[in-house]
Length: 314
Image 1 (cartoon, one colour):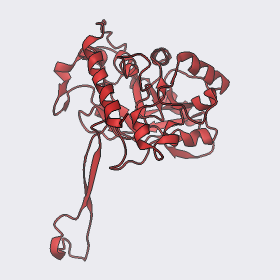
Image 2 (image 1 turned 180 degrees about the horizontal axis):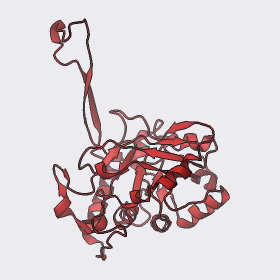
Image 3 (image 1 turned 135 degrees about the vertical axis):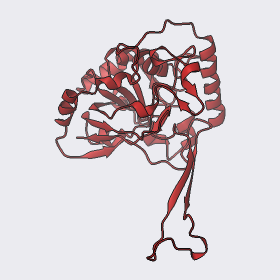
Image 4 (image 1 turned 180 degrees about the vertical axis):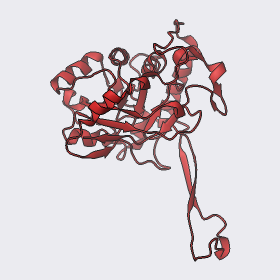
């Protein structure tokens, strides 16, 4: 099955989900009726100082991947880049000295490559985080609330859990999901304690195995979290959940007709951010299980998602 057919079917499933899911009571945010940043409230000076103590070797790893016009993404997402030399045609010079310069123009979707899903990305029954109604916040010119420009720097303790080690494979398969119990067992075996305010990342081997060798397969499916895994992670009051996959949730979904429902659990129900296509392989290969996580995303008003390159410091 082609990437387009697979992902279009998934998108249709998402629409079906939105239209047929049982109504649920909206739970206001525990941080108040006006809150727009959810778990980012867990960033505190105390947690930042504690996270800084995890820097022992002075090493840093970029958690974002390099993207270009060939990077596969959820249809119809993509990007187009042009490098231009404005007003320099025909040998025109703009400066008193013999200078020249390049600029760049880009048309792109912000949900491509390594990205953060803001709290206005995926909801249910027309509602998003903190009971915000799509009719009130979803404007063509940008979200009027929950835009990613509101997110303060996400700084804290990051942990990475190696699910390939847990399952004894080099890479998990598309459609293979891991449950709350799998996460608990893997964490215990690998000596990883998940704490309130943590950024929890998973290594599945999916991107290392597929992105370059078979990009069509990489984007057509993925291993990922089960619904109960998302619920359990939310119960731990973490700040963000991410993985080395393009959607974190398993694809094809664990339950028919409920694709990406972990997004609803984390984003809408609990205000917990999702970090997609995180480059966790280098951390695992270097034997790192905890690190200082730092993210300061571009602040474009009203955006739903943002391309990011967080840094792991250890």
